[in-house]
Length: 464
Image (cartoon, rainbow, N blue to C red; front, side, top):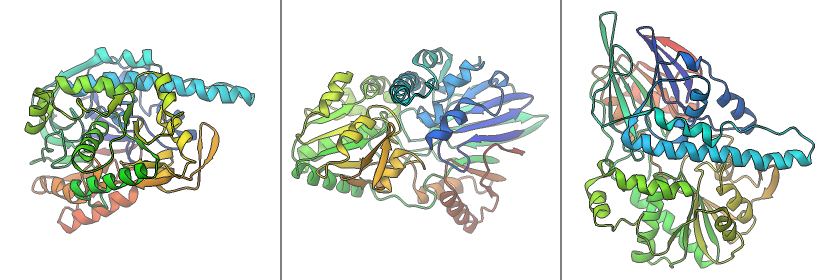
C-alpha cells in the first residue's frame, strides 16, 4: 500500500490523498487549493497523477477545499464512482454547480479589467456545466454502512460533526494476505455545536490520516464566542453600520442565523434586517430539511415542528438575484449581511467588502480560519490596504475575528482524537494544517507517547 499526499500537505486547503492498493488507485477527497491567486489556477488545473487511472473516489464532506476540484477530475477523464454520505452527495451537487457559476462570473468580471489593460482573457477553471456532470457520479451511503470502493477495501463513513453529512472514513484493507486498518479523519468537528451530532472518535487503526488545523490552539467555549459575536453586532448597529460576514454557505451560515435569532429576540440586540446573500444557502436549506439523520435530537425536533431558527426567522431575508444583492450596497441603514465565500476569495462577498471596507461605521467579521494569501487572511491580519478585483481599497472599517465559532476541533479535541488509536496505531500523518499548528500538535502527541507522527510534504509518497 502506498499513500501520496497531493493536497492539504503543509497547508489547509486542497485535500487530496491517493492510495494505491492491490494495483488500484483510491482517492480520498479532491479539493480546491485556495491561496495566492497567481498560484491557484495552475495548481488546481494540473493533477500530479492521471485522473483516468483513478478507480474510485471517497469524499469526506462537501466543502470546496475537499470537493471543489471534482469537476476537473471528471473533465480530465475520471469515470468511476464518488462515494459520500447521502447528505454530502446532495450538498456537493449544489456547491459544485455554484462554484462553477462563480468561476465563470469571476472570470467574466476580471476579463473586463484585463481587456481595458489590453491583456488576454482568462478561462474559468471550470464551468457550471462541468460541475453538473459530477452529480450523476455520486454513490450515496449511510453512516456505518459497509461498501467496497475497490477490491480488497471495505469502507465505512462515521459522523465527523463538522458540517451536514461530514464524515471520517475507516478502511479495512486486505492486500497480499495482509490486513490493515486505515482511518481518515476528514475535518473533525466539535462537541455541543448547534445543529449537528458530536463527532465519533476512532477506537482502532494501524494508520491514521488526521487534520491538524488548530493544532496550536484551544477554542473558546461556544457560549463565549456567542458573547463576542453579540458584542460586535451590537456596537456596529449602535453606530449605524453594517456587519459584513464572509461565511461558508453550508453550516456556518445556518449557525450564524441561529445565533442572530437568539441575540435579537432574547439577548437585547436591536432588531435589524439580516440578509443571507447566497443562492446556495437558500438551496442548502432544502437539503438540511431532507437529512434529519444528520442532526442532533434537539434540532430534529425544531425542524419537525417547523420552528428551526435557520428556517423561520422574521428578520431574515434570503437574497437570490444579483439585482437584490447590488441593492444592499446602495443602502446605508444598519444591517447584517452574510455572504459566501468563507475565505472572501470569490462570489458576492467581494462586492460587499469593497463597497463597505472604507466606511469606519462598518465591521467585517471573520468567523472562521483563513488560508494564507487569501483576502480573508489579509483582512484578519488587519492589513491597511487590500486589493479586490485588481483595485486597491483602504481598510477604514473595523475588523473583528471570532475564533470560537469554528467548526474544526481545537487542540484539546485533536489530542483526544489521536489518543483513541494510541494502543494500535503505527503511524499518524498530520495533514490539513500549517507548519506551526502541525508541529505543535506533533510535539503534544509525542508527550502522550505517540511518537510515530509524520507531517508529510506536498506530493510526498509513503509505502506502508
